[in-house]
Image (cartoon, rainbow, N blue to C red):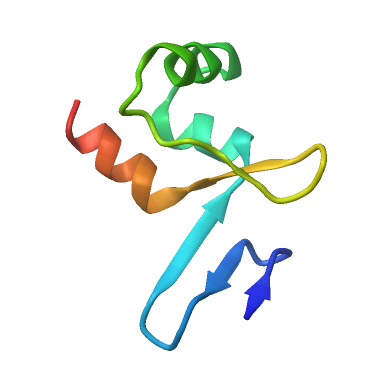
Length: 71
């Protein structure tokens, strides 16, 4: 089941992936859009965005959280 408007993809009853916008990812990490882009280009361990439409990317919140905790 895929519900993009609620930014949640339910893989099954127990596995969920929460997707957040680029703006929300920046706010979560406390960085600007430019810094987010730079980190994503330079740091190969940084999570990659998920393409949800031709012009929109979303970020996996758990992946961002895991990356931030390891910094």
